Length: 435
Image 1: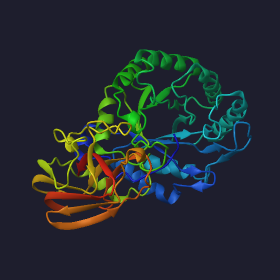
Image 2: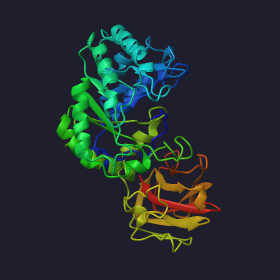
Image 3: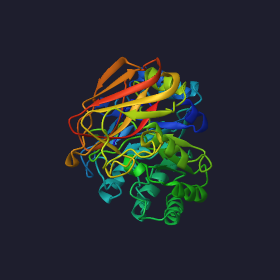
Image 4: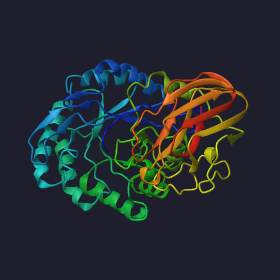
């Protein structure tokens, strides 16, 4: 899971937020050569996260291995460890629990559990914990290398790291396996057995399971969460929600950009709070400013009806209010009935019944070059007959899904919202959300 950060404009609205709270988030401070979260921005960020109801922060990593598995080069994330006391001080003011991510090697060494990487990483991990374990305000340790589906070959590596940490600290230790590519291949019962075996063999206290990105994220994984909760207990099992879209190549087009409100609702529902005490996420953390917080103050607005001024394809029709039925189409299957296809420009009018304040409008879209399906060049929004704005597509045309939204709050009272997309190819759209 490469770390990239995007602005989440439509992640929450008040009605969803009030029912289902994310307890915390991972924080990515950067790399050895690149600072992505300066200390000057930490107070504002912590205030915003606190306003979102979060009290758990996991620093993704404070040291990275570079130049391959056999390398001896480990470097601190820029500014660490010097700025850690200030970070912990700010977290304490907000009554936030902080877990420190230690050494990340998986990007430089994908088979990080191999002997070539083993001893060097263990030494670095022990050195960091020895240095930091007396700092006040640390609630636990996070091991950034991800043990996939908890195959047996991970046991020795993580057991050794845990034993190294335990020389200096008894605080809880977290890892983050993932559910990606599990459905239909590994049964929930088998995964539950793996989780228990991993815990017993390694001594890791908490497993924060990623529900996975985009197309994989729309598959129903509730059965896995239920089994993991039963086997590990609510405190030993965390749900880690991946709020990112699918891309054929990660980080291209709309891949790893913000997910839609509809998909987030589905993800929250299947990670019900009955299964865990803690739900965290990879949440876009920089430059959130007022947009996300503004969205929290409003409820999602449900249109009474909508109609097309452009021609919808008979091959890819709109059946039973497809655009507002809260079912997100699969980006891996353009034939999914949740996709509506329009050849050329798209023009739709949504009727809200009465005038309501609108801040955010977003549309879930698809790009599949081989099928002639393209993200539109631009999106134009009207309130009644008044032009509000035109936004140009801010991502590249790569095979992926994308949530196209206005970038600044509209702040207008409207009954009828008209959305137009400029496109010379097929436009495929799914959920349309209003906040």
